[in-house]
Length: 344
Image 1: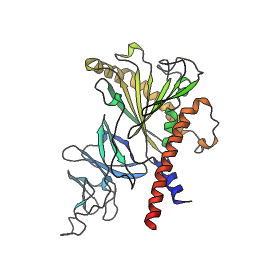
Image 2: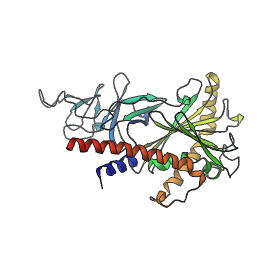
Image 3: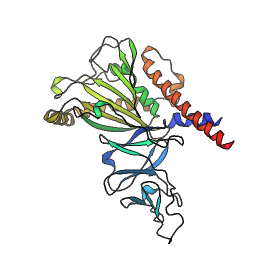
Image 4: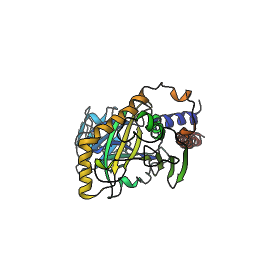
């Protein structure tokens, strides 16, 4: 296998680089360091003395122990094994066992750019050629004060591309979720079409809108997101249709952490009323829907994608597959070309 092909398969299996990915809900990170795996990389996340989230490769530069097993010292973490202290930039700040240790002041651990948005922690995963982060832009449902949003996350034992495929398939709502309070209506047969947007494309049913899960949008704005709306009956609180903004963050080649922001256009007291009704009356129903997706995907054969017979309703899904494959190939070729140039 060529170097470029090996890079390509690793990138495609574990997630595209040079973009931002949500990695944790904010509430998960308090004082103690938290160890996670995302995009196949072991990472330690903690809050410094000012409450700012920091993220480093989860590896002590001394002997390789997990920094996440150590202590939060405010602006740095200390390794449990020998007390080596590493600051938020990945620089060894102190080696308490040795006076004037030559390791000190050396930057030996990778640091990840961090942004905290809408109750989630985003990290930038740049490759060797793109260390500086791009701009992180999110859909208006997560940036405008005209909207209220609540985040939920779920761990799925599938490759992230299966989770993306699921969201990019509006037709499954009328079947898999047919007993849902919000997806029990509309036709079970539809013609589908795709149309471009400034940041990606929308895949939608022709002639039916606002009845079921009738459209989905793919966007690329420094991160890869999906957006859809589901009709809401008036008795479920103030605001318009129920929107979902989703991300599928790879844990490794076999597991995914999905992020779904549940959004509604409401302000002030109406937003508070909606959130109250949602937490007390609807959240359990929506978790049931999410569980239906998880169960179906996790029960698929490991090589399910290799034995598909697709039809017109799958056009949006296959289009995203091509986008991911093309970008993975581009990143892999650039890394392989640079490696060859350096070797020469």
